Image 1 (tube, helix red, strand yellow):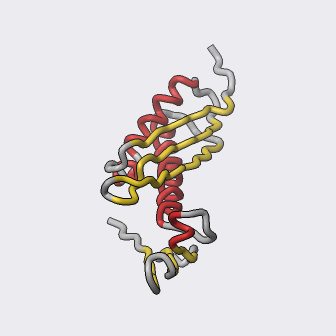
Image 2: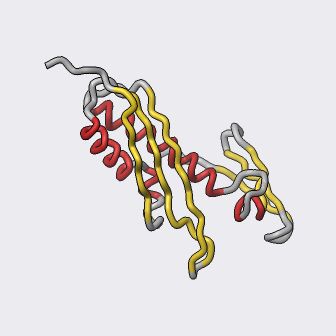
Length: 149
């Protein structure tokens, strides 16, 4: 099976230090720090990268499930919001919200909701993040074509 990698380098103390995150493919490299992770400082953070991974994985999982069911999506756009909160164990990802909008001709909204929930449950990143207490999904079908009867 395929192996993916990324790296992180950190210099200095937790609060005053800084680091760089780099994807193994080289398509992204960015600075991160205590302020970018736990405050609203500039730079990226691991949780933002988790959100990107989850949004991308969910969109592909939904596309695959739609395809198996005979539907071809015109467009799927997903935003993942990773909530970082304080717990007795320390900083923790407490919740992830997935919000997806899809344009799929000929698909009924209730069927879309069912397929989107299946994608949420089967997405590799959702399964990898099973320890997160809550992963919610808001799925919106933005356009449907009339179906002939």
